[in-house]
Length: 487
Image 1 (spheres, rainbow, N blue to C red):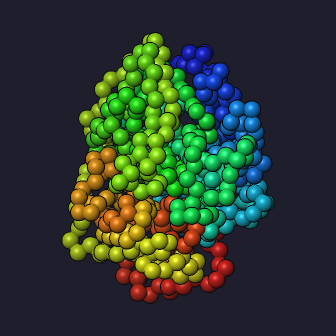
Image 2 (image 1 turned 135 degrees about the vertical axis):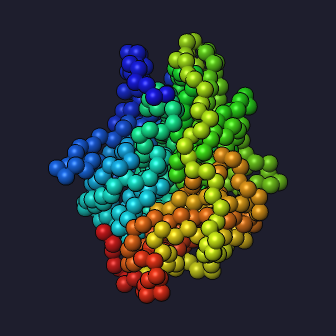
Image 3 (image 1 turned 90 degrees about the horizontal axis):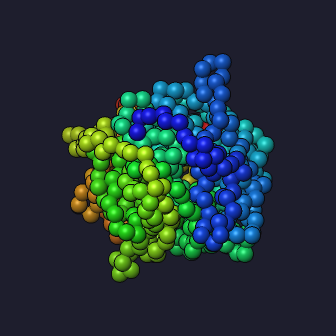
């Protein structure tokens, strides 16, 4: 909750160990698994103009100990695998110094951030090997769990799979009373599936097949077979599906119910009590779970029945084993109201845009870097209708916050009723979104919308839109000079 208790020496040293900069999980613990790694908070400094500066380095020289007795070559950000947790407050100006030490060009996209297009980190903001990119913006959105990952055209799947991803947490002073001691009762869980060939990550399936790679081994925060010791009655988990394609239905082996408090773009209006949440690649969900002293319980993912499931959501996995201490720090009930926005209805006359998803195309076209597909007025509120004519996809829109109005004509579950930026679309389903666009005008630098199953994105299932001054939509060129970078 809103408290700053002193941690016991034992808990504190466990936290420091789990936050090691090396990026590899702790060693095997007697065959019972590995202590869950907690990503370290990113360090920052204050520039002379008052901006908070974070330095992030993309590395290709990681050595990670995922499997017992084996060392795996990995990529990471400021470490061997994954990245640190960037954290900033609403109203704060941030400046990112992103240095590329990879053997090839890449980008770093701020997934879930409301920011100018030139700072977005999409495929138009490439960073060459050895170069540093310094985007900056003022945080102007509610508290949320975002993340960052590369977004190079046709290579995103491989860069993310090898380990380039991290969380970006936004704090908003005056928010609801929720568990908030990072690493103690506020725990990030980055879920990924992998395939190992001996000690090494097998990459052969990343760029092939219908969906790309579907792994048989789960890592959580880069930890294989993780366990975590709980010290509080009420624990908040910030969950990110950072897998390339797999969908998870997350809950607990004992069937306990828990509360969803936030989705992609921030708090719900009120807690939603559930026993499972479905989360597709790129989506985030924050849940609050109550524990009893001395108990052990496994967080798991249970697949959909095969007769109704897509290939990417059929399988069962154990994720994390939790053991509660004999004495737990007490916690009050969750607040009845979380401060998130109430449900919205489309404004009269809202523009409707329609998108048809096929195997690897949107509206019958592959992604073209020089083509602007849509032009949107700053501050617009629109309805986007997504018709999935084939197997499973999902849909992510850069910069925006949207509401899911309905799926096949039915309202979404309560835990998906809050502001989002990514939505799962089952095979042959139709989804309507109420999309709210930001104020950042730039007629020549596009944002993206795309399937966030990374193999599909890389194959061309992506489009581009620009945001312009209202009334100028018809004056904007629909092409961008080939090879033109927006940095």
